[in-house]
Image (cartoon, rainbow, N blue to C red; front, side, top):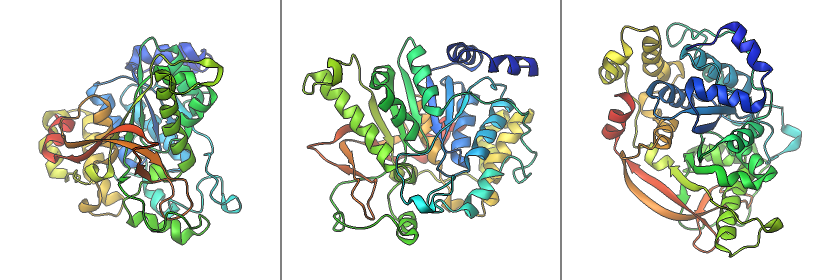
Length: 387
């Protein structure tokens, strides 16, 4: 049930652990999400709340992704309140590890990437009437600590393994692990949305610059991934930390202080290649797919309008929009039979300046093993997502 205004004010004064436990009772707690709150992130969160396939401990909103952070946090608040799950903590992520060019850092996005003109429609999609009736929101105090602190607190309070779903940059999970590597023992699987694992080194891997907007913007035409790229150092840190955890557990590596992990996370990637198999659906298709679930209730109609009208609100074509983060979200709920081709790959993150900065590469010598969905069946996905 939805909390009253008094409940919300009381929650501000609760301890971190108590707040997380309260969220667990209202909407559950076995998954933590880090996100940049793009439209596909919003769609994934809506599915999590509607399906009740897993329980959400909290969400951290990135500072550098496909929405402005101030808008992303409020939009998640809109979704949680409309679904009656407004006790789920929403935390703000901080500045990333990757400072691409200090003089051009504006406090929101490095070098204007992604471009503000793209994000304006994303920021206002739930409040401008573009997708039908507005998603109302009450001014609710947010979680009083940073995103990585939410991760750390939730993981340490957990009595069983908790999964982490990365729908944006890797900044906050990398910070949490850097502050306290033992939290890795509490993470079951890190699910990652997007990414393309390169199987061979490109010719220009050994040179380049990260200081020209033109070069960075050109990445949008490639198979690379914004989530990996916008804080490439954090991406590399997480992959490396998981690899070091596994080596320490096997006795191959002596960890600081002699810590021997009792468990290390698995890695699962819903690759951009597979996501490109999952074209979005038209309004009429969604009406048919969703059926009674989108009829007769206010929230059902809002969900139908959101998915059915979002493409036009973004000024794009149906062929340009996929079920990107929605597919990774369904995978994180343990439903992955729509993936038709898998590969177990050893992956490293390239930090050499150039066009392939922050891309994932197959590296059988130094890489950390990850299970990657390479292709997906759209019909099978739609059956799972809309049923």
